[in-house]
Image: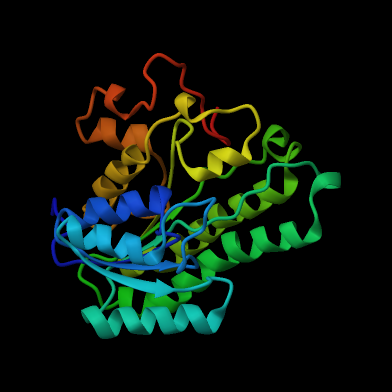
Length: 272
């Protein structure tokens, strides 16, 4: 299978950035895409809403469904999943993209911010999987793909921002557990992480880094597409890196993904 035509994807945090890029890439195949995110009214600081994302999906050749959903709220997640199934008849793919970030040390991390990251990242990933799995288990080639790094216990990734690392690795460990539980039942449960910084609004959270040192979200979207079109059986529990996935798919030239080819690419967090 090399296409997502007719497949239904439920993507969290897809109103902009990587989530939107994955949605648009699937839409080019003719997929149905549920855009589950909080942004339903324009924000002057962050472009993009669930409505503009759904329009982009439609324009790319897919069918978009805008769903206002805070993945911290169980009722909202279950309602969004039900609305997706009502609209499209099922769910084939869950992409856990929504994530909260705060790159500060322990003394500079308000507990409100700490709690937000744990609720959105690890708990939100678990909740969305729990809500989608009854439908995924009935799908022909079911995938759960989570935007999370390979698990690491190296203190160099923990010391500078324990709260964020805990939340992000939480997504990785949820992936590990769900892969172990549902991989044998035919669901591909995997994680994907970029080799380099990706030019999204989240980069504004990293002092001293500019988007020119990164790649466009298209590289993650293309890698996600390569993963999600693979047969699900026996393909679970992998911690994949975008560049490696695309190399395996035959891509040799990555220069087109660079935001500014004259600037050096910075590696993303959590990768050596």
